[in-house]
Amino acid sequence: MPKVLIVEDDPTIRTAVIRALNDKGYAVAAASTAMTGLQMAVSEHPEVIVLDLGLPDLDGREVLRMIRAVSAVPIIVATARGTEADIVHSLDAGADDYVVKPYGGAQLDARIRAVLRRTAGPEEEAAIEIGGLRVDRRSRQASLDGAGLDLTPREFDLLHYLAARAGTVVTKRELLTEVWQMPYGGADKSLDVHLSWLRRKLGETAEEPRYLHTVRRVGVRLSPPSEPGAA
Image (cartoon, rainbow, N blue to C red; front, side, top):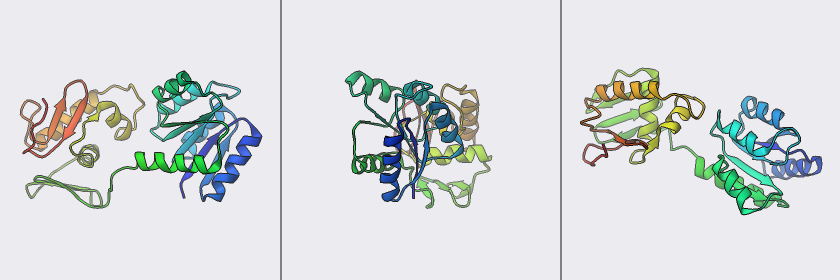
């Protein structure tokens, strides 16, 4: 039962949306102001936020940026503002989807299910095997060519996050947000240091990578040694 946070100042719309989503089986929390919505976004740990832009105490796009500074929770902007510029600005500010009022409960339900599918993390229960590298989330153990790796908790989390997205370039901003739980724009020196330590334990260097390939000015990609990496 996914938890949805509704941030909407209009009591009629708010009540209708809560009822519609409850009928679909969602657990729903609601806020009528931007500041209450921000507090609940942190305290309630919603899986999706439905955010109105026309809030009485703060513009919704500013709320969107503030939530994005501390959380990667999917956000659907639901508002009467339907111009292309409004949509583009909201998506650029970090929204995952945009729905224009008036909208029905069935449409909102479909959009919530769609963003949850898009943002669902990879399966974390099964051990991940890439070349000679094996990462087991359940036991929090990793091995390389059959030999156990002595990793710190942060090194393991970093390796698992990259291994679960093998072949995909993961940006430093994403790693800082998802692994370090650091707001967007935070310093990445700690990330660089941990990547260096992790490379050493994998028997490689940034200049001669085997698994961890740096994609300049973009991020890091974990791939098997047989695949060429971008240095």
